[in-house]
Image (cartoon, rainbow, N blue to C red):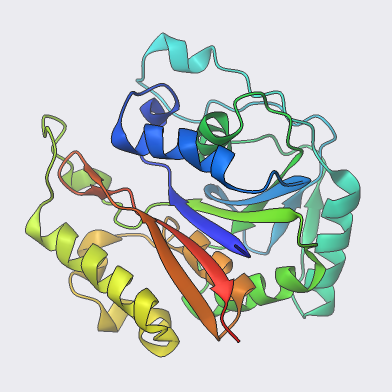
Amino acid sequence: PRSLFVSHGAPTLALADSPTGRFLDRLGGQLPRPRAVAVVSAHYAASVPAVGAAPKPETVHDFGGFPPALYAIEYPADGAPELADVLAGTLREAGFPARMDPERGIDHGVWVPLLRMYPDASVPTIPLSVMPRESAATHFRYGQALARALPDDVLLLGSGGSVHNLGDLDWGSAGGATDWAKAFADWLEEKLADGDIDALLDWERAAPNARHAHPTSEHLMPLFVALGAAGKQFRSTPLHGDFEFGSLAMQAFAFDNAA
């Protein structure tokens, strides 16, 4: 695939024996092994596209109140500063005021899925920001620009969540989905399958329960960057669908250019 979108759920996904954890364990082995991975994380927020360029990015434990084992995890992947420089330059050529961040570590939106996909941390990793104040269309263009500079052997991974309302989780839920969350997740999968880019970019108006599913938009924006990398003539393949805590949708998709 040209790009992937995965839902990273709660930090506990790093260690959980769960359907989504097992899916990510398999996914790393099913894909051709990339030379590097560029990860657009919902937890890396900036006002412009920011490109992490640390040669040895530190593992950031950017969450509170979770089991101590999660704070002990280190994901010692190398960075890829030269490729980061190329990506930032391509974004600037496309009109984005992109900046390099030589200090940026890898947050849990990056290391949680990568720990499951590539547990040996052998794939150099570039974190990329989302811009929470910007639209889906802007993030789509951001993905289109990245695709111009991304070699075929570099994986673009959007890491967020297809339904993400932390104020409306059922922590005791053993599985199954709330109706409102399922309606949004089903709409998303259907519009991706149809290639309906206009509806997708207008998700706030077009989707059922849009602002209930995403009170803030940063967890959906990585999907639009991944989609943009595949282009307007994209083909979407659903890879995984599951719910945790009643409404935390754990969907994953692969995107290719169908043209």
